[in-house]
Length: 618
Image 1 (cartoon, helix red, strand yellow):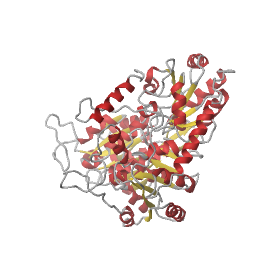
Image 2 (image 1 turned 135 degrees about the horizontal axis):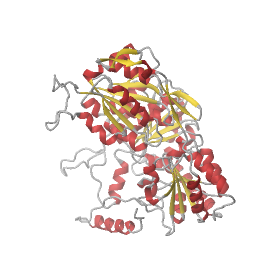
Image 3 (image 1 turned 30 degrees about the vertical axis):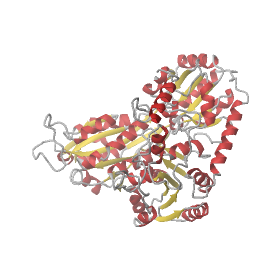
Image 4 (image 1 turned 90 degrees about the vertical axis):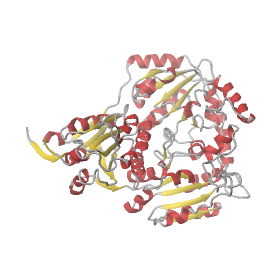
């Protein structure tokens, strides 16, 4: 057997550089780069390998470990999970900063390869700088924290273990049914240890993503269910996008006159103005989708996790005869809500059902058109709201929808903006709507926009972010400047955590610690004047081109000027608090206190209990 002597770090990099994906006959390189923040646990081991490597791996310098990992997630999501950028860090705090990103990737089913440095495998110098010691077991390090949020976890305590560890890592990263965060812990001494690796370990390895075909029995059972129903509704999830099943869904819906609603991950798979597209489904959904869903007797859930925001805490489907038919490659997701299922690829399943359903037609007449027309009018109203004392959030979104261009990518994740965007944003082009809403992770927006820009260098990318989330994390804005990857940060300053303020007050609780106000020494609370923050001035210090926006005229001028900028931009937009969209024909279950001194809270609890009684008990 022919071998080559390399350190574990060198072997890891050489292996990563030879991984490829093949999907529908199209082959492309899987690992495009590595994000790093060097520390003592990685810089002289794996870092030495990166410095001296002559292959086709680009090394990016991160600013915050969580931020760079979010950028990697944004890249993988924009590339339909067929390209990744790995992330490596030092031990201790550097590694732990990536745990939140690991959760974000795993919840959203996005491949993310994390390579945190670890304590010495030999233990001789213990405790080393930044090592977390547990008196109960020397086997436990800070990196054990990744286990709860990783789809695969391993620690390479001997250089030869790298081979089985990385083969398993690739198994998970390239599996559309089981992908998520993969954590391979790298003890800093083992990174530098050498081993005679077999040359075949470094040969080009092609991972074939095969479409899982539906069985004859699955199709027959699904056809029987559908034919027994009069008013089905389709929920278009992220699996439709990753399967590239948009046209299959369009054809299926049109042939059988079945309306469809979108999850955050599925939005944009088909243009917003399609006659059967009801828009967002659920808590942050449209009135059109939620009205039709309420009376539907069948829910055809295609590639969706069926989260509480999609199902409105299992309240959305009020028809006593309603059933769920799930089409998903992931068995765990397919079994939710007592569903009948097709455990297969979305595109192949929809095509098979279309061929087998014959002359079936739903019983819808003009009700879908009516609710869609009414909703379009409501969005037009929201887009046109004029306020005397400032800008409304929905008016700004309406102008941006017209101004930024149909090919531009919008990125979002948390706060009130995801709800507004799912309801009112009108995507017409494929892969222009990029929302992380499985974890709704604050701080994703700016960092993931960089990842999306790396994935789509010829498109303008806009990060839609609230002031609360921007303050949480915007570290990779600097990296965008460094790399010459222009992103546009659209910052909505509503002086606080507006989304949570609304939730708080809607349940009878006075606003408390959710606004950005000065401490009032008389009350002892944060209920003084609002803190005036000049986000434009702060970003300008980074080298970002900035704009201050308080009027629609200023917004229009800023957007047009920013299109000509060669560097990243930031729009500091002052919007009035409470001017986001409200709920439409929906409900969301939260934990309202059963005992309280406030009558308003007790009333909210009674309302909550009444709605709980209407939900499906799955």
